[in-house]
Image (cartoon, rainbow, N blue to C red):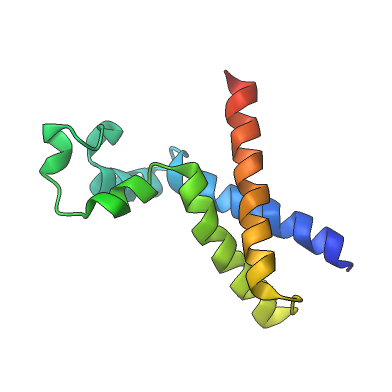
Length: 112
């Protein structure tokens, strides 16, 4: 498989994992996300949100698709580098994160 196809697959996988964590309504994932961000994804500065024991930055991460794509891209890049190998893994990680974030932005733009 050429690196171009591998990059596309890594970007799509990173986007999909981030979307699963941040937006999907799959009951086990929604339960975890609600425990972290508060019920109904309350605004981070609301009194309802302040009652949780989770740090602000972690709750923000679970509500921000752009932020989450950075970490899912890191995970995908690490797994692919360990199994197949990629040139310049740090640069690939950042490029995959950017591509996944752009896909997320495109989805938000077209769904409105």
